[in-house]
Amino acid sequence: MFQITILLLYLLAALAFAASRLPKFDARSKLLQVLAVLFAAVGVALHGHDLIGEVIQASGLSVSLAGAVSLIGLQLAVIALFGALEPTLRGMAAGLFLLAAIATIPMDMQPDVPTSSGLTWQIQAHILIAMFAYGLLTAGAIIAVFALVQDRRLKAGMLSSGNQLFAPLETTEKLLFSVTAAGFSVLLLAVLSGFAFVENLFAQHLAHKTVFSLLALLLFGILVAGRVFAGWRGKRAVYLYLWGFAFLCLAYFGARYVLEELLNRSWS
Image 1 (cartoon, rainbow, N blue to C red):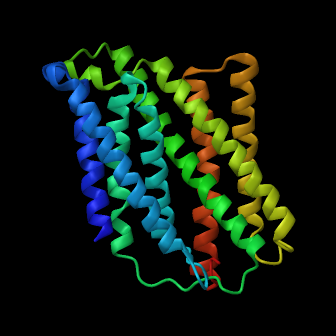
Image 2 (spheres, rainbow, N blue to C red; image 1 turned 135 degrees about the vertical axis):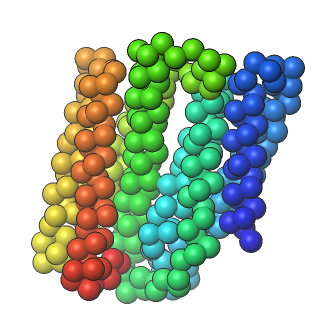
């Protein structure tokens, strides 16, 4: 029931944010913005409450692919809500809320997932931090693709009323690098906690996960440093981000496939 309500709230927020940017709704722009923020805030609150209840249980963590997708949706919604404080980003916020709505759907279809009751609190904390890092950087990847679409539209000279849904490319890039810096920090914490709390990663058949995570961390670190010290922007920065995200996907989904499908072992 919660998932349906959250999905509807996110869809309404997306519609209201998008409409508030279109010229034909100028007269109702303020009202639409207020409604969008209200729908979004209630949706985020319900989504967060529901996700915490699904993942953090009395007997331990219940980690599933559907839960990871739902977490990404929640992070997209939070980024969209704060990003919408900048009027020109409300069109992007609409797109992010649409994706967040889609991300809530798998939670209704997932089977019961056993909890990780045998894990120490340190390992469970590491898993939560890693999930948060993956979700945040996935949100950044979506924003990176949005920046590429904007760049292509600008170079093609595509002019229409729909252009109001796109923020200036520089504004989108600033949001992307803010998410990158936050994602890099959380991923660094996840990697450090893994080395501190997970005993003998190689014996647990997680060597490939560790290697790909370190490669992703390196690329995101180079990107953050390049932005801060050399002012990197444009396609070079976006493509570097997407390469880092590709390694992150191999670390997470590749490790999950190897463990569960090839080695018949539990992800937790």
